[in-house]
Image (tube, rainbow, N blue to C red; front, side):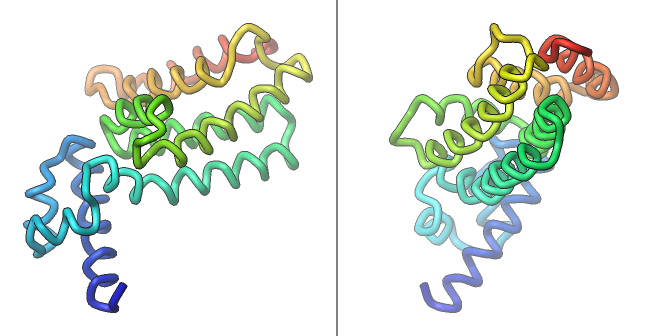
Length: 182
């Protein structure tokens, strides 16, 4: 990629990050291109689909979450590690309002641009859950899919104007439902 193309790519990502954070995952790709000062063709050359754009935006966050899960796993008690990671993934999902729908679909669709990143992120959370279950700190009847569904639910709650102010309380209720000693 030439220096100019890389500059355009990075600028489009920066603009997309801002617009998706304020307008949600369904923000107009045309508006993203216009705000970035590039043509729609340039946007599509870099990101052939909305999923490809979301993947580029979320990949870094998901990679960081996977690394964070490994760090938490080594340095924190299993319940603390699981809840810390859960709080962080909910914040990422909430930051890109509406992206959870694409994330859930990508887990099942191996052809999705988001698939590998979502699978890696889900696996990191599942490892933390399994450790907590092994130590008796988490309910044994939930799995990584359930945990991911709870992430989606918590991100949805945070996105709702009437419920957003209660999102920390709802998080604590869910945490109490996941952990055995809450």
